[in-house]
Length: 480
Ligand code: NAD
Image (cartoon, rainbow, N blue to C red; front, side):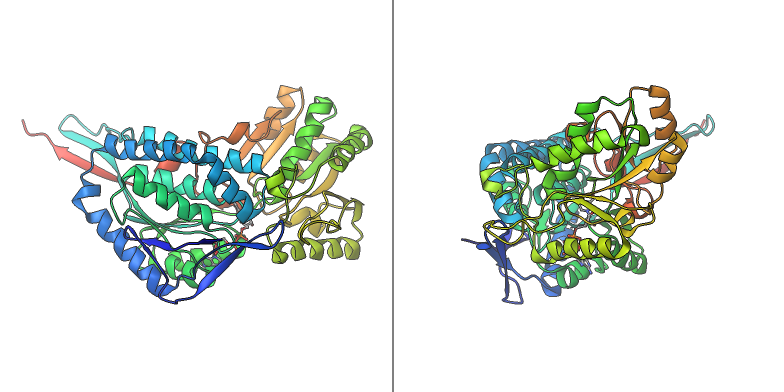
């Protein structure tokens, strides 16, 4: 069992609370680690340390290419420790080892990608008149706060930390209380990579304590929050109170829109893959299947068959799908199965905890068919391996269904007709659209974020750097 500490100002410390949080492997409920229950006092120390580091000559005056090299070094260190980090992630969160390995590689890619960008954060020159030279520079905000969810701990930590550091900010990270282990390990690697002390701080703890203390701290300059809509809304209130800039990456109810002319087998495989990845505990999961009426029965039969063959078991044994992360989350799935029964939504397959498993947290891959898109099962984010099926007869109807929720994160469009695909793509409410694919293999390079209640601001890609910098305009008068 790991006994971990928090990372403040380059030191490994206990919390002022003297209390700990225990982390269990949801596949067997064995305790794998404990770490400090950080509180407001710890957050104050971490923010102070990040603020001092931001002002330090060591960080502020560091040549940008050198800053980039430190990020590249992080990428190398993550890859050197890939297997160990993947095992820790699997034990902590429950996901299959193959997925955890991918997550670790994606984390390395974030440091690699933004390491390469650290000396390429460009401004513009702006023509005003011949007597003026006007240019912009992109400057870091200062102290950035990163509040991370439990579903992709190492990936999400890296996703916002790497661009924030590349742009010259310093950081205080608050990982989720269920899954803090790999974020703390990233901090260990950051010591080896040679980041000055205080540039990266990791405070473990509960959302209502450490998380809200961080998001309401007056000395932070930007907040990146990834998590649920209600918590995002509360973080936004804190940001508004103190006039802090904010990136919100919230939930989704992403559709896969399947036309009759789609490549049948490949699309069916993808529809299942986008659902069961990480046990459906993915903000971008393809949780709504919107099928053209003519192929509904045949396509659904095939999807159902593929889902019946999904293997479910402990992440370390690398089944297709691992457990749900916690009792709280699986209870939420059961609540939605009750709602399905109450509202008359048909549970075509699955719908229960799996029996005779090493823990009580395994859920069956599930298909539900509501009468209408207004069903709660078709509207709300369930965060499990449950797909909701809707049908359409025209592309206009497909669009109306796709846009019928408050979310707008990702859309998959499956058709051989490029005109139909582009027609939909330009009208669908969605931060990302994938045509005849879903996810583009990780997509570190592509801007990612939501419309509507899926949030705002963008992570990933060079676009992300705009959200970790502020523009300064400089105008110079040229005398004759
Ligand atoms: P959550 O909102 O409960 O928690 C997210 C983080 O916020 C955790 O670190 C938690 O400790 C912290 N937190 C909780 N209460 C807080 C408060 N009052 N103030 C500040 N911080 C607080 O969400 P979750 O259950 O961890 O994650 C699931 C949700 O996250 C889903 O809705 C999912 O779609 C969303 N999500 C979105 C993305 C994305 O990139 N869009 C990625 C992953 C997860």
